[in-house]
Image 1 (tube, rainbow, N blue to C red):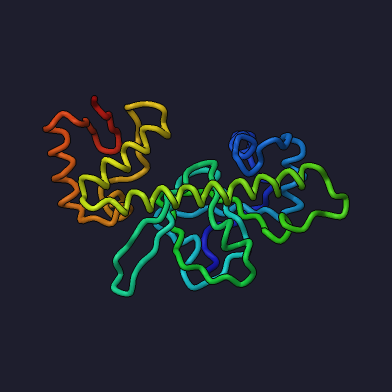
Image 2 (cartoon, one colour):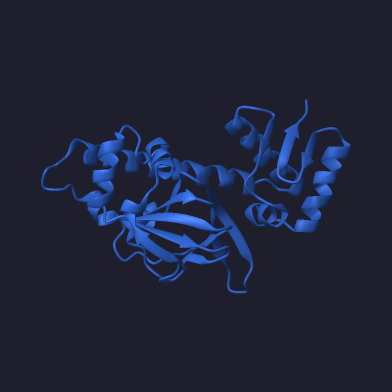
Length: 232
């Protein structure tokens, strides 16, 4: 599905280049080489409004997406329209790596912008096939891509851990504990609103909200919207 407003990769701002340079996909590649690499990858920028479909289930993906600004959610809907949020991809992160690396693989998920979002799309075939000059930074990116795919697998393994908990309370505590560890602090923000969190954990929103209030009343945690503090 062709959506969003497209512009060339050379329109990338210095601020966007900062985000690219700090990302896992471009780790260890100099600013100068990044610009050359983006041309090699036929990179294009696209801007999406809120709730636009970036990728649609049933299609194929030949590009890796990099979130320059904004947020996208990776969603899976069942036959009856029930939504399950598989992941939230934030600024400086990528999506569709696994699908793009398998020729003609059909998307089993939909990628949707959560707000106005700017995406950098890069042709995966140009990543997996080194250019004629066999530049060192291109080889470095292939190494980074492998690390990125492995990292995504670990993320999905974490989600399986959350969903394997039997009760809504246990799912919440498992997820919030993991987010606390990821942030390195008992106080942290999560990338979900209440409905998104319920969809991510595959629980009823009302039941989840009630459980959060019980956990707060029991002195286990404090929260304000998406801001949480876990208490000893």
